[in-house]
Each structure stands twice: as C-alpha cells, then as structure tokens.
Image (tube, rainbow, N blue to C red; front, side, top):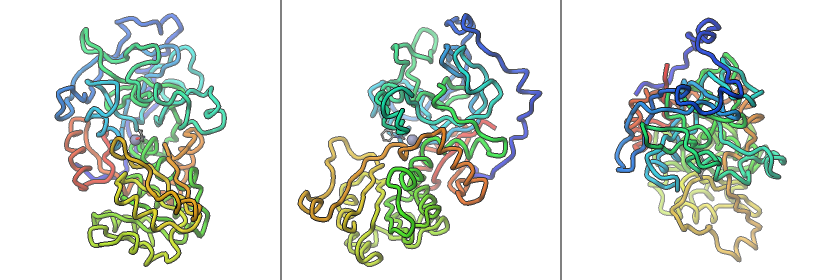
Length: 403
Ligand code: CXF
Ligand code: ZN
C-alpha cells in the first residue's frame, strides 16, 4: 500500500492521446471480434476466494457505449459485498464502480464526450423515466437492470474469456480493469487539475456521503447531525456537514485513527461505541434534545435502535449502510408517530452526478473537500491487499491506480 499523494497527470499530453484514439462509425460499432480490446481485469470468481487478475476480452463499444481507459478506480464496500455473491448476476464478474480515466473510443450515438476527454464514471440511469426527469436518477425506474444486471439490457455480455461470458456492466462500468465500457449518463468530464485518483471515489462513496447531507436530507445550517461509521461515506458526510455549517457533528466509530480523522475533517464530537454501555445516552450527553439528523453507514440493528433513541423531535434518519437481508426498519411505531421521526433510504446521495460531481470537484480544488485525506493507493494486482486493509481499518478508501 502507498498512501495517497496527489500527483499531476504527467503522461497526459495531446500527443500521446492522439496516437491512441479512434471513433466508431455506426458500421464499425457493430460487433466484430477484431474490434474487441484485450484488457487486464480483476475477476471475482465463482469459487469465492480472492480476486484473480486475468486477461479477458472487452467488446467494442456499441452505438451507445464509450470505451474508457481506466486510470484509477476506488474500492467501495458494495464491491466486496458483490464479490461474495450478493447480487443476482452470478460469478465470475468484473466489479468496480468508481472508475476514472480517458475516453478512447465512442459509439456513433455519443455526443457528450470525445476520445481524449478525462472522465469520472458514476452510476447509470436511463434519462427517460419520471425520476430521471425530476433530477433523482439514483431512483431511476431501471436502476437495478442498468446497474446490477451484470449484462446489457438486451441480455448480452460485454466481457468474455475465450468462449465463456463473464458478468460485467456493474453500475454500467465494471472498472476493476484496464478498460471499461460505459454510457453517456455515467460520465462526468473532469478538469485537468483534478487527479484521476480524486475523481474516482466521487462517483460513489464521496457522492453518497456528502450528497446524503447536502441533497437527500438537506441538513440545515446550524443543525445537529450524527454519523455512525467513519469510513469513506461517513467521513464524506462529515465534510458535507462542515460545508453546510452544521453546528454539531457527532461521529460514532470504533477505530481511533478514524475518529481522529473525523475531527480533522470537521466533527465536533466523537464517540467510541466500544467504550459505551448505552450509545443513545452518549449521544444525548452531547446533544441533550437529540440530533436533528442521523446518517447510518453501519446497517447494524443495535446501532439503528440507539440512533432512534437519540433523534430529536422531527429528526430524520438517513440509511445508507447495507443491512443483513430481511432486516426491518428500526424504531417503535408509536414513538415514531409521536416524535414525528422520518426514516429515509438514500442511494448515491440522491445526486444528479452531472451536476453534483462537478460541485464536489470545485470544493476539492478550493480546499474545502479534502478527499485526498481518505485515500491510499494500490495497483490493480494488489486488490486483495486493498480489500483486507479496508476491512481491518488500515486504510479508509483504497484507490487502485494504473499510473
Ligand atoms: C449501493 C448501495 C446499497 C445498495 C446497492 C448499491 N450503492 C453503492 O455502492
Ligand atoms: Zn459504491
């Protein structure tokens, strides 16, 4: 592992881009074996166990697809859950949904980017349903098929090993690889002064945390916020809360280094849950009337019940942490009614990536969203070490870098 140290993209020059680029005409984008790209990818295998790095074939971009050379990709907890087989698409699969890189080829219908553009990849949405129209694409009516289907919507696969298909299209990207096929609505252009390693985690983890505060819950300035869990999402929520000038920002996190990081990023108080018999009481010691907002990144039933006891009247609990299958909502119905509590599920911070990710990049460049503090850099072939280090708490957000 190497800790993150932002570096300029020294090899990004007009000269070397022009040598590599190609644009598909409509005819060229019809699938031809000769147009596939041989890529290095981290494969989650059906036997379980670690990711395996292998050479596989990636289809040529169809008319609505974009081939991106990946320069950096973040590891999100959802990738780890998917590696364990939690999604229906089956294994083997190429995961990865926080990619950033350079557009290399575009299908005939692509108008928003051209080869050579630097881009971050976020989740995919259809752009045509009522939720997309209403600027809530994380709740797109076809979100499951577009992001968790493992294949194109016509049932074809984008990744192959000899005669065998490999699941892909994860979040419309599958970016644990040297190259990914993606779609126009996944893509956000990034300026030259934002490193790929910074842009990558904006596509999911940072967007989820900061967006939960700034978009989904839309916490007021001066409000009291509780964040449970000090990983990428929780700490991005802290940065978002500082931007929003929340008056009280409490972080519950068992790892001391993460509590320290939370304070550096703007938390006003931290709680070590392992040192508490009664988490709700500890929250109310800090905020006697309870907190106006809580964001849970843990998905743990005991933590969720404590949060409900620590919520102020008319307080809102935002849920982003994946819970065990079958978990029920927390809270006691009559108390929820009496206190006017709200419980809200949040996907991707309820963000419109094309608007929110550029805002996040501006904040990074202005120095008030120090995402770099969360990052540790690994190579793609160190992905299993990255998973282990994230799990043990040795690092917060691993970035697999190709540079
Ligand atoms: C996740 C959030 C929980 C449901 C699956 C997708 N998003 C990003 O990692
Ligand atoms: Zn994610």
